[in-house]
Image (tube, rainbow, N blue to C red):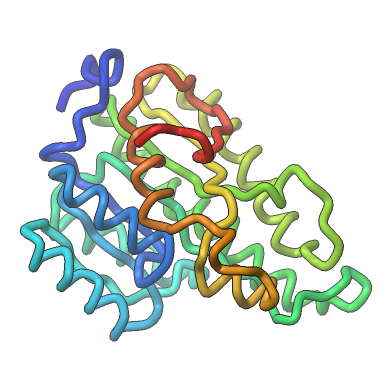
Length: 248
């Protein structure tokens, strides 16, 4: 893959990808989608068993996938994640910052939110992606190519009661995406913020237990739409995109 390929279409074959929050839900589906398209994938999550199972399923389907057990919200984990990923699949071409936490559930009003809980949400949803991007985007810039995808939410633009900590983190992540894009505009590294929409995931069930699963999107279908957005050349770096309505 060359820098020029971004001007036409990003060919996912023979790329190296790193996906956080990859043990279940959208992260797991995205890892499978990228591997099916020919990318060598490193999957990161905190829980070993579901993560290793997800990686094994990708390998059994003919893809290349590796499991790294780590907490993106832990400052001590970031450099080991980047180093081990590069050792396993080579320099990372695509970084997907998908790992997220809601904070304590049931969700709470801001007046009832503990400062420590807000701090933890920001560490996982915002500071962790910043740290990992800082390490990996630097390498991308030296090579003159790369893509960083930050998974956003409609909560980043809508003020939903009790979603305060999560919403704040995602709104900041959107703007972080735009700033990265401006600062590395000449370096060949692209940044996208993608709102996947409401999905049938454990996180959604934790947040809204009464939601009808039948009314929610399948993470696999959303992952296919996001893969389409990743491969397209037209979204400008720093754009905030919605997966809903995209034809896979």
